[in-house]
Length: 230
Image (cartoon, rainbow, N blue to C red):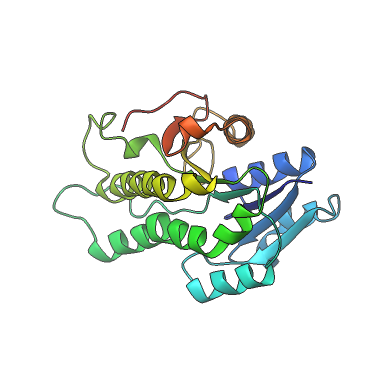
């Protein structure tokens, strides 16, 4: 049985990915900040014995280390960094909140790399050996033709750069890395006017991860399978 660790598994894309992997027969290690309030995620434990839920704030690095130690000796085929935050909306140049910017970078950039550091031994001992990070198309310099969105855009561009560096460091050890654009998804972050449902996004993301090749490591791909320019 293959194993995936999914952060932010209690709602949106994270919950859709959790459900999809469980249906596919995987062992799922699902994390969220407050499992007690994650009713939908908790309900899955009644149907799937292969689901284990962990309390984890990905920016609490002591907690990250504790979960990694708790899972010592457990191979993890896919580390799926889904948890992230958008930060403030409806602001423009001249009104960037520096504390909010730091908070978004902590969650969207630093935490995924610290997770990779904490779980690299688990991944190395698995069969698939994949680190995947949910990024966003707005992090593409080429696709940025409108400006604005300084905080979220820059965090996803930085995440993509960090994933590329991870590939350079870890591919020689057999570990592949990838940044993934989930599409504009109908979630609390994407809003009701988004174009696709979380289930459609999850299916595309899982297909890319399942079939990721060495030559694609460090790349940036849409849930449709299309490569996104940096």
